[in-house]
Image 1 (tube, protein in one colour):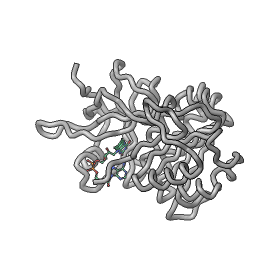
Image 2: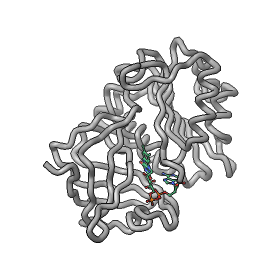
Image 3: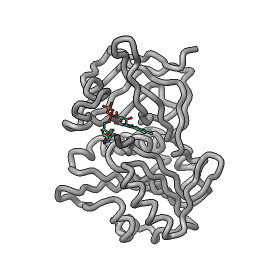
Image 4: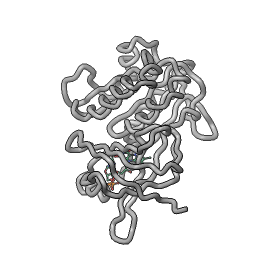
Amino acid sequence: MSTIAAETVLEVRHWTERLFSFTATRDPSFRFRSGQFTMIGLQVGEKPLLRAYSMACAPHEDQLEFFSIKVPDGPLTSRLQALKPGDPILVGRRPTGTLLLDNLIPGRHLYMLATGTGLAPFVSLIKDPETYERFEAVVLVHGCRTVAELAYGEAVVAAVRGHDVLGEMCAGKLLHYPTVTREPFRNQGRVSDLLASGTIAADLGLPALNKETDRAMLCGSAQMIADLGVILEARGFVEGAGARPATYVVEKAFAER
Ligand code: FAD
């Protein structure tokens, strides 16, 4: 079997000039775990042009979903943003990644800390019933520059809350904390500053960050991950990975070139 499947784009939604999401058909044999990423892309001439993308959908869903940046002159996204329903899309069959529930030791509160398209793996996790079975509170923090950039996250959270089965499971547990850095909004500031100052926990009525009860997953720029890593480790959190579950895990939302 080829390591890359040819799927078909079903629906495309543009959220801002920089962000869009799309759904695609899913080969039933393609299995992944919530929070993982795979290589996706387009056939360009003779060669596939592939980039890492987190699945913004749950393992139980029939369709695939992705949440994407539009990088001006980006080799893949300058083409990907023109996708239309019916277009072909390549999807790698080898998902991987560290943002897995199994990579965290048990705790009470799960903090999912995202900036920009770093939201994508957490879309998968907030659609997974297991997340609510393992944690009493599931805190989705999404930092963007502008209010418009929060729209996809707002729509996904509303859909989860309104879902027949998930709605009941996440009731009172799924706490959404969107924040922006460049405009007035009810929550303002960088995710790292808001976590360090205790603002997020206080605003949500949760106890102060504590390594005994809290677990964290991070997905954003290298700088965001470095800043949050310092804050968490100063409080005694330890980074986990596949063979070594611990109190927090990280994934870069993109590689800087
Ligand atoms: P590239 O040549 O790949 O990137 C050019 C430059 O654009 C980069 O150097 C970087 O500075 C900037 N950039 C790239 N991606 C982003 C981004 N997402 N946000 C902000 N700046 C960026 N991208 C997504 O849009 N959605 C995802 O779910 C996603 N998941 C990823 C998971 C992993 C583990 C990694 C490593 C990357 C992921 N990316 C994701 C980034 C993605 O792989 C590509 O970089 C992106 O699609 C741009 O591709 P490109 O060929 O147009 O430009």
